Length: 306
Ligand code: SF4
Image (cartoon, rainbow, N blue to C red):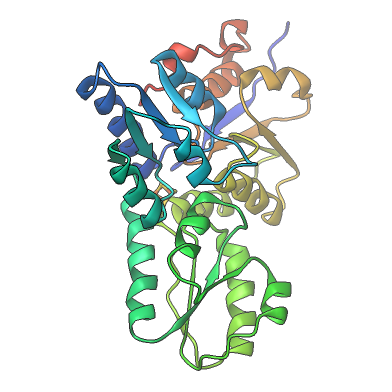
């Protein structure tokens, strides 16, 4: 094959955020601390199926089923260690795990905890909370479980149909929302509840990864590496579209590059969500640079490399 010179740029920052690195390290430590106990993760530690596979290799079981609530999944654990993910957990579930006698390991990201504490603070002052987030996302589920006075807003349509009667309203959001979309929803909420207070809580990792994509110029293509179910990965692709990059490819791993016609691409940027293993992104970059087929594979043993 004649290799046409292609300029490949790794977008900085991209890939694992501090919350994900912390969560992975916490589970690795639990494996060392509890060698004789079965370790379960309640839900996907991060939204990437390869990370689930990487832990399976180390005998850590991920309990994840869209049809079941976190409580139902918890009921399946009889003994051992339960890990709560970076997305946070309903305190009632945590309490139940302790009452069952399980060893509890909490990997909730500090930014998620900060956002939950903000909601609790305003609730204690008599506010209702308009919480901008994704339906059924573990982070928004954990926050909504805190109190009935937290109202999920997923879109401007939800703003129209919302009916918050309290004159004290806090507007805040899930940490991994899109910096572009959230502005529109906050504006709509302020039109409807002009007296509301806004505390925008997109985490720094999400913001800087999205901003870096927004600022890309002169690229014919953007490749976003990540799990199809990862919210922050989807947001990166959307930001790329809004930034008018001509070709956007969202892929899970380097093997999917084979289905992409790379011939007309001379300058490509590669980014990845905060939940994407750095190894997977590096395989993509290495293949694009060399077209060496050794990079067209996924080695599960390397997935948990930080
Ligand atoms: S994306 Fe943000 S909130 Fe989520 S784990 Fe990473 S740092 Fe924490």
